[in-house]
Amino acid sequence: MKNADWSARDLAVLWHPCTQMKDHEQLPPVPIRRGQGVWLEDFDGNRYLDAISSWWVNLFGHGHPHINAALKDQLENLEHVLLAGFTHAPAIELAERLIRLAPAGFSRCFYADNGSSAVEVALKMSFHYWRNAGKSAKTRFVTLTNSYHGETLGALAVGDVPLYKQTYEPLLMKPLTVTSPDCYYREPGESWADHSRRKFADMASALTEHAGSVCAVIVEPLVQCAGGMRMYDPVYLSLLREACDRHGVHLIADEIAVGFGRTGTLFACEKAGIRPDFLCLSKGLTGGYLPLACVLTTAEVYAAFYDDYEKLRAFLHSHSYTGNALACRAALATLDLFERDDTLANNRSLAQVMAQAARGFEDHPHVAEVRQTGMILAIELVRDKATREPFAWRERRGFRAYRHALKRGVLLRPLGDVVYFMPPYVIAPDEIRFLADVAGEAIDMATKD
Image (cartoon, rainbow, N blue to C red; front, side, top):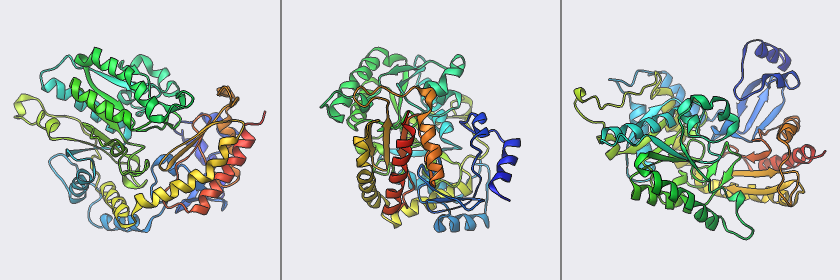
């Protein structure tokens, strides 16, 4: 069967995520037959460089032999068992390993199924902690403008991207929203650190005024990914940790997208030398193979729920596939690769290649900024470079770039008019340069009137 056959069957039965399905009248979904390394291949034999790690999940390429072997071995023993009253080796070993690798001070790992679910766990756990501690007035959360934490109702409520949130506003709890430290808006000549430090004043004021009613502050450390890959300096996290401690408020770090080496360290919070009270992990946790998420937290939080059954203090949150054995085994194999291949050092070299390959975009008449944190690089397209006037959103310039790149064998999926690179860590320097060349063609084409 060819692409057209599979696409027709798809459109007869499927409803795709984050998609206006009418678009597929002009651009049918691309049916993928196989993946290997950074490349995907369709049923007509066309190949596509996966420049966005299949929605940021794939760390070590498609079809990695080490992860494949681990899953085959696990299939011979145990595919899944409930994690209530039972346990298994992969779940235990993964929890031990994550606690050892994460910033010091975590002692417990609570599994969930996906990133949004991990955020739900952290929100509920923080709220419930304060209730168990006798501080029932603490019911609110503080979030940043332009933040994104998922699309289940709790996670959606603490996000701030209107495209995802606005329709469902009547269903959502109301957080306190403070200005992001987004360095795209820094003053001329102002450093990332100075801008981030200056913008912290908004957070400081909010905590001073509302700490008595706030459970936690939730942030995406260093990069607001779904908000257009907007970035800020680690100093903001340092100031936030100190303020949360001073005001008796939890800090939730949503590292679902930025964890596992994306920012240059294994966890983004390491850049600031801090430990949050809750660390949410998913996406790259299993190397892009299977859905799995977890929340790491502290002995202090765990102790607030540990009591006789009759006290009704237990954290009664569950998912049927909590701690799935196959997913945990894939995660263990993924962590093996970080240690075996010195991935973080290699990523630093690849990040330099990405920076060099994208340098030419800085002079493009419709590029306002090229920004980078580790293995995440973003190119902001605008109508007017001098004033940073954006293109009208209805013009869908990023979508034009996406379509052109597909024809040239690259999977880009711009966020609005932000073209970004977030490739698997096994990408080669020549492949990075090819990606940048195609992105340049796509940007030229997309920004022509």
